[in-house]
Length: 153
Image (cartoon, rainbow, N blue to C red; front, side, top):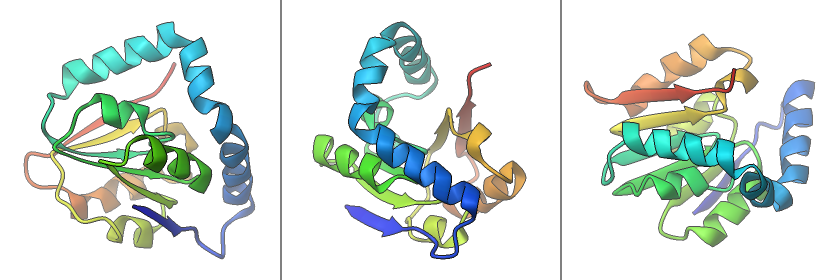
């Protein structure tokens, strides 16, 4: 499911980020493979934290590799880049993908929750307003939903 929800009044920063990620999309999986030590370690740790069979939402899902590796009962990914989403939807047709900016309320409203786990892997540093974005996730949560945030340091 490829649904594009890009705000027509995007900021210059958002437009630049969209352009960058769309340009990187065709080579993203190759780069992940090339740096498999780092990405493999991240994926193993996420699998340790997140048991299989849960309802998982990944924000900033890229090409969908991590979401697929988590083996969710229902997996939904959102990414700013429609080109990343095209690749994800093609490679993982059993998962649900949406293109849109997670900082825009209409993007999050377009996804039906609740989720057991919400993942932001290497995403939080790209947000303009982390606090508002995290607050907006409440609509997709239930009382025991876990939010897993990973970011390189």
